[in-house]
Image: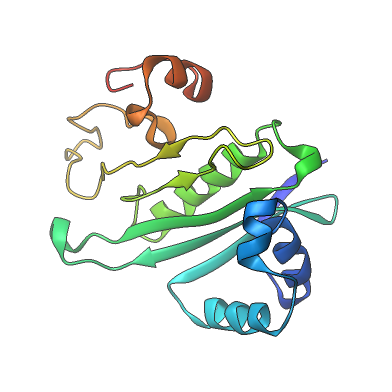
Length: 181
């Protein structure tokens, strides 16, 4: 069983909406699959600065996320990566698929010269079934801080904004410690 990540296709859209609306909170905001989702999909896929990524396992879409690349003026014109709507099939949660989606987001960011999310917020909230109830914001960027030898004078970046967690939550969510986490 090999998981692949790819850009969503129109035929994936109904499943994507199903994944996004898979809890009471999101279901109210997302609604049932229909014309508004088709228009949204067309707008996202028409934009060169947006990617709707699906995770596929054995031919089935099991996860989704939307990536938006935001060009900037600050930080020497660095682009930023916004990661939204990260969802994993309810039956497969807790198996590291969400982490693999985020790793893929980082790879896409590096490929598009937006090496780290400048603003990533995961808001699960306690009303969501199976959520961790955490909200994360990470604001370090690598665009202007690396040395000519490729190392970073600030040290390694904590994975997925872990610097913002308490020590206990870092241990639970981020797998340990480091100079900034």
